[in-house]
Length: 171
Image 1: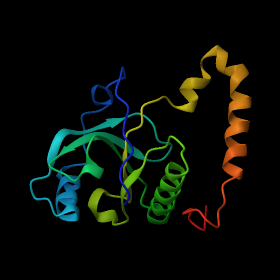
Image 2 (image 1 turned 90 degrees about the vertical axis):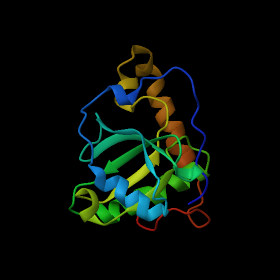
Image 3 (image 1 turned 30 degrees about the vertical axis):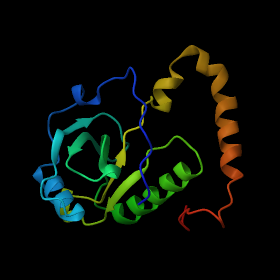
């Protein structure tokens, strides 16, 4: 995969202080050590489940002793077993194509379709500072700004040239 986007520092909510302390097990670390051929890879911050995801389980983590593309705060998004592999692959390709086009979306650094690793296919991506659309929409000022913002974003998306992009065929 291409190099990772830089994550801006500044004030933020530490996602490692929210959510459950359950983690996807040592299976993720074992997978990454093998995948990256880095036996010394370790957790700088172990996986912590965070809120979000309609039908996926999401964990925040940070790794040590890994290539630069896997450095910094990361998110692992685990899909349900049914249709998770094709969906993880397509969403990873779409997110990276959007990142390449200049959209502020998390760059996906790995996609695993082997459901035996974490109980479902998963993507490993960079954490991007910000808030969810639902959270933003609770601010009164967004009631007036949201329609224009959404319309301009959709219009910009429709100008992207699918033939020259890296968008997956099924997106």
